[in-house]
Length: 116
Image (cartoon, rainbow, N blue to C red):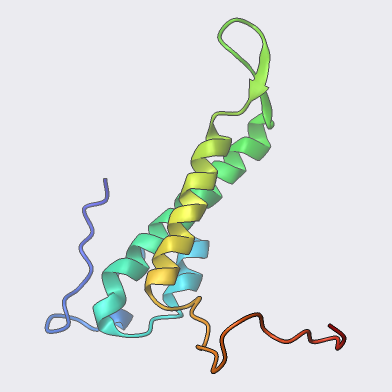
């Protein structure tokens, strides 16, 4: 568990954060919307770093590993990596980065290629 606590609005600005996040997490830090979203953004960064680390380990060890009884099986980190990626998407959705504007009309959107 990380002991880093995101700064409160009265203590620090986001530019003074320590750098606990690896390269993928640091890229996410560039998209800060408001200081009130600092904790969600930090959690997204940690999850992105975790998924990246797991992907590197999977690539190093291979996607198929030998199971406990000698049978070939999928690497156990594949599921954990997918869960970390889902957490990143969930945190970013909570930050409003995947919001779509509301449409004026109900029903299916028009076909961009014409026709029915």
